[in-house]
Amino acid sequence: GKERKFYVDLITKNNLDSLLEYDALFIRETTNVNHHTYRFAQKAEKEGIPCIDDTLSIQRCCNKIYLHELLKSKKIRTPKTDIVIKQQKGLKISNGFEFPVVLKIPDGSFSTGVFKVKNEEEFCHQALEIFKHSELLIVQEFLPSDYDWRIVLLGGKPLFACRYYMAKKHWQIYNHSSKKNKEGNFECVALEKVPPQIIKTSIKSA
Image (cartoon, rainbow, N blue to C red):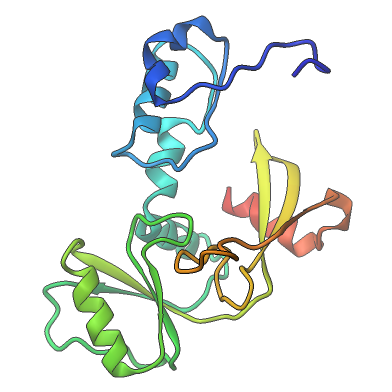
């Protein structure tokens, strides 16, 4: 901030009353509609303070089912996906899926509420656990990868890119059951070195 000639201050959830002292808000915490970050974004928008993430983005991006339907309608390639409803008769995996598969709650983040199951028995057990807290669950094919791409866009244009690597000996970027290797490494990548298809897909998705 000093290099750019402006003042940066770190605030917490206890500083909502002092938000009007600032000219912009940059939220770098888990965002959710039922979270204090959403109330911060709401207040910022009401007072005309530029804010990232804005409330509409939080609403959209915290709903994995909404995102799935949106990407599908725009013909953007995603892992094979199915939505399972709690009231659905006969809990079993859909045709076309092979184990292992990934189960997700609709509003999880930072690798929470995401489970890999390797057979029908594990699928039924984990699905019933999810249905204790949610009316819906998402089933996706498991596509192993060493890293996730993160392409950040501002105003529809790529701003920066990075890779989030999987936690050590784990299939997600966060391993909440590990004490030592809880999260994987990350690497910033120059935009011109990012595969063009990745940039193209990120712009189309946004």
